Length: 331
Ligand SMILES: Nc1nc2c(c(=O)[nH]1)N[C@H]1C(S)=C(S)[C@@H](COP(=O)(O)O)O[C@H]1N2
Ligand SMILES: [Mo]
Image (cartoon, rainbow, N blue to C red; front, side, top):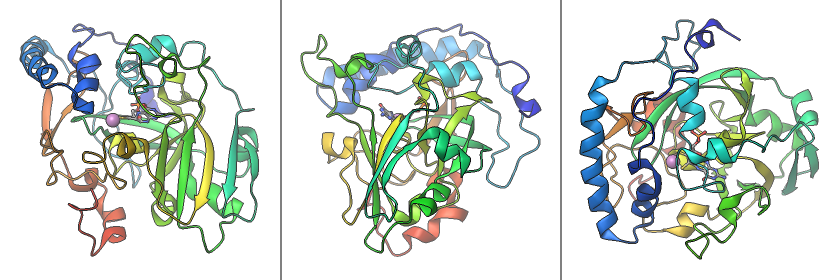
């Protein structure tokens, strides 16, 4: 692995657990109760002042490749301890702990079905034989307003798609995460008494989006196998879209004619659409998307406020796909 990973990957948090980024953000996102939003605002002011002590515990990536950002990396600790993985928990900090024993290997299989000439169960081991693994340093922008810079390893999804030979009817791909109550405590009926999301988690891409060279299936991060909390053993990465499109722990890819309904769209259709392209000009119904907070070791809420870029800064490679589309309508 390149030298950018060598230093400073285990620094710990001083402002440890942000209660803002945990349960309250979940409630905020689901729009249930207004007063949770109020308390989140109060708490965020508190954290921002504590975080003034923050030092930037990150490194510069000097040997950047075309797609790779040269921005400072988020530390390995942050990347693997501040997660959204609702199958484990709606808390940002809990997936790291709860996923300790979730260590799927290369015998993990993905069911490839629908409009393809070569459907079947493909093991990760097989897939890795006909794909080329490389390193990609991408920004990740969550719809909640925070961001990170993450060194993934993985292969271009296009390589897998070509191999399974979609038919002319294949216009979209629908992805599914594993559904398993024994693996995922968040899929059991918890104290809330209801399922926080409809399982299994589903996502979709249009075929040209799936074929775009930026679109990655990540199998590792920071030069190591993908930890459970980051979506082991294989997850999608679409860096110009909000993070929820980057579905984790994929067990199924179905090639279909019709646009799939993704989980967050199904859960709150007024707030989350199919495309979810990062767009500073299109506000979430309840908050602006004009800026973002970079998560640091010292603040899981994120202190460094910076402007959000159209398509998360990847416009030169993706903007053409949306020519003539009303991106405020197709949000
Ligand atoms: N199956 C599944 N995939 C998921 C999620 C999830 O809850 N379940 N969360 C999404 C969201 S909202 C984000 S921001 C990213 C977070 O990825 P990370 O934890 O590796 O940073 O994963 C996405 N993929
Ligand atoms: Mo997200």
